[in-house]
Image (tube, rainbow, N blue to C red; front, side, top):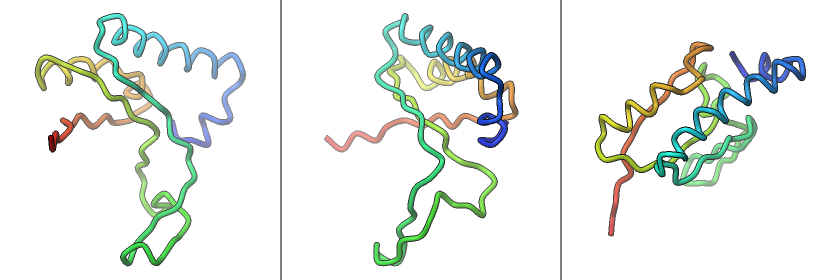
Length: 105
């Protein structure tokens, strides 16, 4: 489901979609694994050329967008993958990227 389709959902379908996400995120939080999560608005700016060129974004020529992010704690990378496998985005053909945070401290 792209952002246009999401915005065109009926109030009932919108609520059902939100409930899927709340259930998944709530399950991770109930395990004490959730650090934080936020959705991202579909608009923004892209800086290039050392920050001197500012254009509308995100990458409108791309077919994929980052719609939000979640930071969680896991005992292993495999556990993080297992937690991500329950993401509701898969029911609409979306993807999830699982990455570790680089600790510079």
